[in-house]
Length: 201
Length: 385
Image (cartoon, rainbow over all chains, first blue to last red; front, top):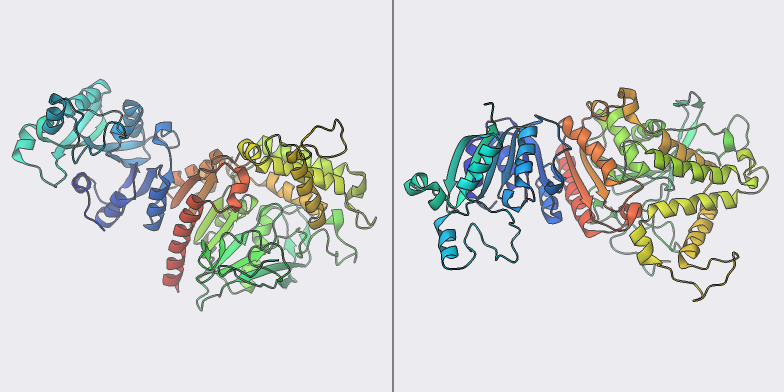
């Protein structure tokens, strides 16, 4: 198997062994395969794309063909230990609502998304163009991303929705997390990784 | 007649028969003292008997699922698109068993076979059979073939209900269930359609309370109407529009009731007429009742999650977006109950505009996903050996 995306490697560290995991927008199942091997998890992937579904089935991953924009009402509250969504939040019609749904069905939620506040994105905009980068590879006219945000924006949303941030990390697609990234995450981080739960406050 | 039998066909096949002398107690309270099942097999059973797959048929299906009975056959078996060398149910790897269900009219004991007690054809005296009864009879067939555990039990529509029932009734004997275009129970609307079909048959003057064989006739009009109604519900609105639109057979209106004017009428007449020649009205009545009665959750306070708590099989559940007779929502009920029990399940919701009929068609997304799943089943069967 090709090497795993940086954000996926990182979030694997955050998942305790033997837990029940739901992966929203699971793609070809790579993360679930990885978690099954490294963390002995059980669980399911939700995916909409036909080709990805076939690949998941080939890998022996439990995959449920679902349109995430139609919500998660098929799932009971607290059904999963972790609900994971990687690089998909920005393509969802109602990200806030979906986050709340994820927190309803999962004890903890892990999300990753491209940081629109990264300096390259800011520079592109300063020069008059929508960003194009490793983390944001599509032109504005053919991107699935309709709700891009910065770390600061995301954290504002968490505040408004009473979501507690348990852990945050930023990485770049080359697997690196430098001191600069830790000091200036919203400027230097290309990909954001968050672990969340419902605030008890 | 096929020009030449295609390479990916199972080729010429010959049905086989198995008699069962031990009485079968049925859900309805009656028993069949003895019975016979007709079936076909494709592929080879391996030494460990770990590669056997059972095909369960739908309302009007039978044991002839793949290949040809003779070179004169116009069409292969009803699921030839999915059974054969290199097809999703790959006969290079699996030993496939396909039978005609009890109460059928294609060779297994049913209304058109003799009642051993009277010596006359059963007719309306044939007892009501349920999906559970079928699974019981199929389990006996499995035993007679030396199969202790199916690598997979597979079916579409009413066949999918049998696959699901297998996992409840004999959880240890099914490693995988493929449940296609099915439902955990019929809706009121579905039962209503079945009742109209039954009334069409029952009210035909040639029905003679099910004893039409003795009157040397068949309730042609009733069975034809029942089938016409069925066909409307197996197609989607879009598929009908695409296939027939408002096309007229003669290009003009005739202002009369005598002939089919619109192409869609002609299609329904043809389907109805050809069905009468190959199907038995009493069997049609029995099959629709088996559909209506199927409701495994009813034994668990109508809680499907509880009903499925004990299943051991892994599942592939498939539905088709334009199927309104067995809609995706019905398949998702099965998926949901399995998820809540943390069972192993994958679900495909295939985008298709052909309605319920889609489960018999070669739709790439469906065939690819189904093949991927069955390859997994095959590998598992080989390891099991």
